[in-house]
Length: 271
Image (cartoon, rainbow, N blue to C red):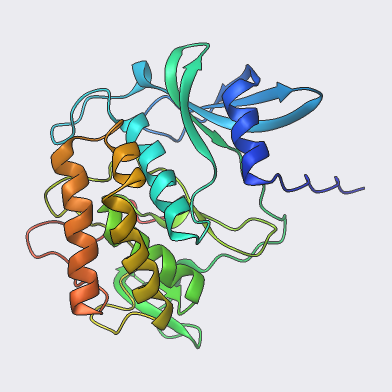
């Protein structure tokens, strides 16, 4: 017997649950570099799972200020919400069992989900996929890191360019039952220097999709108002200004960015 899928929460209901619900930690996600906990959160008879990342569990980084990663997670959600693309699950900053941290709604994926990013034999890249890097396995067989030419991933690639995501691994892309895609783990984003690292380089230099101009224009407008103010609760003024600069550059070029020359273009591990 298979379990019934969890009903999708409206965004407002999810935010209320995250903001007011009672948190009970279930365990730690051991593959994460920072303390990342799975928990149940309950409010008024409604219970869901969430991911809790306490600030005190963040490992110091040489290029990001200490204690800021949780705020960057929330900032990524705020930008995602402003685009209207629903790319990041509802995320807030609140006090929890281990102190202040980012709380994000847990995303269930269908058991038979087929990913859109992965390693494939170099001689058998699927039709409609982009090969973005070459690799070999332990036996010396040639593989390609590749991803689908999919509009949902294209939106995510644009979003990553806006927030300057330094860690878009394939495993950070989730496929909810709604049929969209979600990106998670945005703690190393919003740096003022170009640190874009991603596995989604398949559109390098290609024109942005038609919808991008309208979305980016709206984003630029919101950054001068409520969105900019909300981001400044978690980021420095300079970091928020650089979000606006990246949006303007994307609008001016109307093309997907090219890989950086002075920074590794693909995160490790890529999946």
